Amino acid sequence: MSPVAHTDLPPPITTARRRALAAFWNGAIDWDADMAGYCTLRAGGRAEALIKAGSRAELCRLIRWLEDHAVRWRVIGRGSNILVSGQGFRGVLIVLQGDFRAISRNGGGSAPAAAGVVVEAGAGCPLPKLVAWCGRQGLAGLEFMTGIPGSVGGAVCMNAGAWGRAVGDCLDFVGFVDREGRSRRVPRSGLVFSYRRLQPREAVLNDAVITGAGFVLQPGEPGEIQERCREYLARRREKQPGGVASAGSFFKNPAGDSAGRLIEAAGLKGFRSGRAMVSFEHANFIVNTGQASADEIIELMNEIQKRVFRASGIMLEPEVHLL
Image 1 (tube, helix red, strand yellow):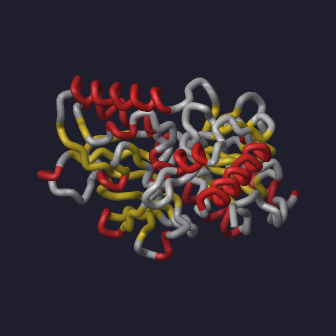
Image 2: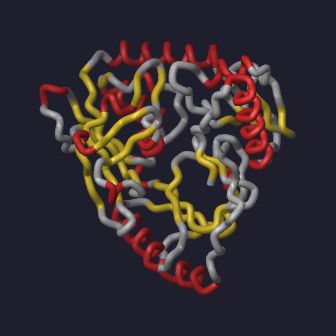
C-alpha cells in the first residue's frame, strides 16, 4: 500500500497542556504555525506548536517535558524532506538553531589522526554552509553534497547521497538525544548504514534525535575543492529543475533502477494534480507551480505510485516524510 496522509489523528494538545508548556518554556512558541514556511515545497498544513531550541541542554529539557506530559513531538530540519498534510500536525515540531548550526574542526572524534581531520557539525547546520566551510578550510570529502538543500541532521538520518557517494562513507560519530532527554555520542561502529537510512545498533536510540555528527575529511587545496563543488553544482543544474519549490528527489530509487526513469516511462512528466506537477526536467521531482496545497502534492504522489506500479509492478517509496 502507498503511504497516505494521517487519517486517525492523535488528540490535540489540551488547553491545560498549552498553558503548562507556555509556562515551562522560556523562549517563544509559534502556535498554529504555518508549515509552508518551513518546507522547501512551500506547502503544508499547520502545526499546533513550533519551538526553536538553541542548545543541547535546552533540547534535552524540552524533550523530557514533552515526554513527561505525553505531548507528541518531532524534530525537523530545513524542511527539504518533510510535508505536513492539510490536516496539520497534532503536537510540537522542534527546529534546531543556535549551537546546532555550529561547525568546529577536530571534534573529538574516534578516528585516528592518520585517517584525516574530524569536523563536527550540528544537526541544524545547513549542508551548503558545511560544504562551503570545508572548502575554505581546505578539507575534502563532502563535495558530493554540493547543492543538497537540507541540514546535517536530515542528511545523516537519511544517509543522503549523490554521485555514487553517501554521508555514511565519511561519518566518524553521530550525536543523539534519546526520548528520555539523555545525550549520547555513538561512534561509527555503533551505526548501521543502508540506502537512505542510518540506524543505531542500540534499539533504545531508534527514535532518538540526531544532534550533530563528526566527518572524517582529508586535507586538500582549497581552490581544487571549490572547483569540484562548482562542477557538481553545474551537473545538478543541468539535470534538475531550478527556480521552483520542490523537495529534491521525491522517491527513493528501487534496487537496480531509478525512480525518475520509471516515472518517465509511465508517461508522467508534466502530469499534474492541481498546482503540483511532475517536473519536465527530472521526473523524480514534484514541483509546486504556484500555491499548491500539501494535499495536492500527496494526491499527485499517490497517483504516481499507482501508475508506476501498474506499468512496472514496482511500488515507489517516498523519500519525503509525511507528517
